[in-house]
Length: 609
Image (tube, rainbow, N blue to C red; front, side, top):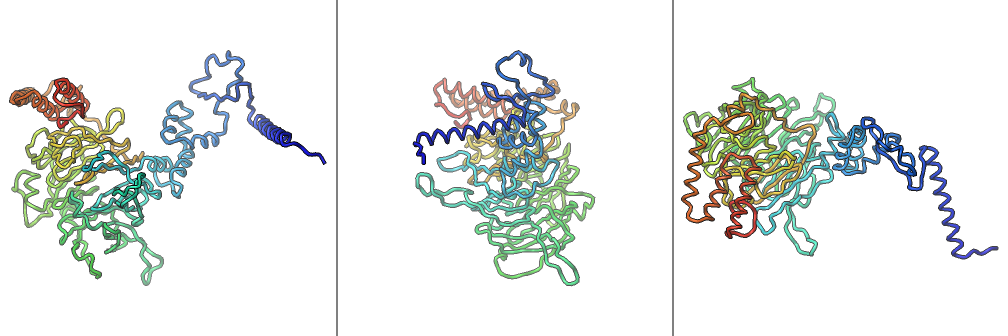
């Protein structure tokens, strides 16, 4: 028997490992035809459209570079699928070959399964796997509280089962999110322990699945979330077969949940022949009207008493055709918006019709009570608009419309400057805000408005106007009569927003198949607009602009001190019809002059700094 020393045993083990590695390397060289030089194996990326690397043959001692196209496509796709989504998109922009590889559905299928392992189906669309991967990569709910010491953007918990985010709605205590597969999530506020061991109250930090098969949901249409006690969910449910039929049928229904606990308290089921796609609420609690939009563009309504929903009893409600669908049967409604006392309808042709149920709101919106009929409050009123309307936002007594050319029109009460027209005069008809174009989202609240816009470099910014009390316009506590840039860091893929009394919410989600496509404004209309543009030539009303400038100068002259004149000049810059970048430039320049004069210390460049 021969005994080996420990060092001999270690050397023999290392030799065996080297032999195995050498054998594997030889087999790899045999199957791939690659050569190994002293500098190691090098792979050269070459594109057929770019041609070979010039001077590559003159480089000696480095081996023959090979093309990445010699690798099997499955291997290249497998390697690329481990990259982050941002890097995959950047790699696809380098050359034609990598563009085709990075755009392949096989790559996005692997990325989607890595991002959402529990997603079983790829969804719908022309590019289902790419769409699903980007939806799950960009999904997020961000919020910024108006009060407290920390005024920064935070992100809520992300449900692992969610397939992108389609809609969200904050209620009194929690937030509800609907994804693209019809799953409604219940994001709860709760007390959690921080890293330092302190107990703190955190928003939207835990989640549960409220229900599945949901199409849409709604709650009390008022801006104050205190009134949002119940959540109405439009869903599809399988109903058991009745006598004389075989198999079950899918029927639409409305389920009512308590927003505080997520408990279902009421359910109403419709006939299987009726299919709905949207639900909105209007009216008071004791006479709550549910408006249901069918796939064919017809509107049905029913009335429930919310004060009796918590009582365990069953009763029958009557579903009736709304007057806008009875009187105008040729109209096909595609979208609805509502508040407590009015409803707005957008048709497939871009027309807008209004229902106003109270005289006070009617006077704020139209400036008169001449056509208001208190005995026929459901009579639809058509708004006169110059182009097709794509989407809208409806506040308590003002509204905003966006047409196919990306122009924003505001109408209604302007007591706090919530229309963004630069003054505080009410508008009884749609009035264009000339210095804002092509918004991503528009939101109207109680007495302020918000616009989500995108710059030429694809960066997002949030603009706001109206009342700034309570911090609802971050950076502008005194408010503004023009849309000004708010001090909010906007996510790159933000697509919708909502503001409550306590918090500002922004939903992040990018759908590659659904995005607003604006048309270019015809040259004849560009010339007729008062806003300056490259093709517009001279302004149509130079006298009016001159008078406005004289009025601005008189206001500046009436200020007693230099600091007051600086503040007034910043406010006037916000009123003037300038681009957002130009306003930022003037505000920053005025702030620099103000600091040089020793008025204020360094701070944000806003009139309220």
